[in-house]
Image (cartoon, rainbow, N blue to C red; front, side, top):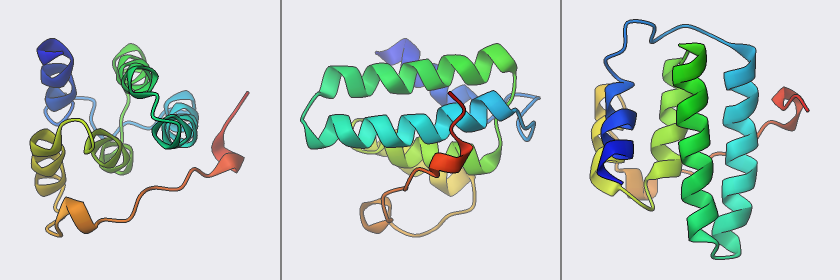
Length: 112
């Protein structure tokens, strides 16, 4: 788990941060949708797995925008609050993550 969290944290420092990729965008919104359902059904293992898949997609495509990182931080918060808080502060968000609204998937961005 530490390796995964370290990998997520490094996304803030990659040289390709700010690069947009349609597949990563689609994967981000699909992850929001699916992870939300997993949390409602208390399927924590599959929820974490979906975060890993999204992170791998970001590295595979070497593309991640700040907006996608903000979503990733919110999705990560139930599992790794300190890292999620650090990510949000690095991305310029000063509000408390505990009061941040849960992201809503934009189904029009999900490509099947």
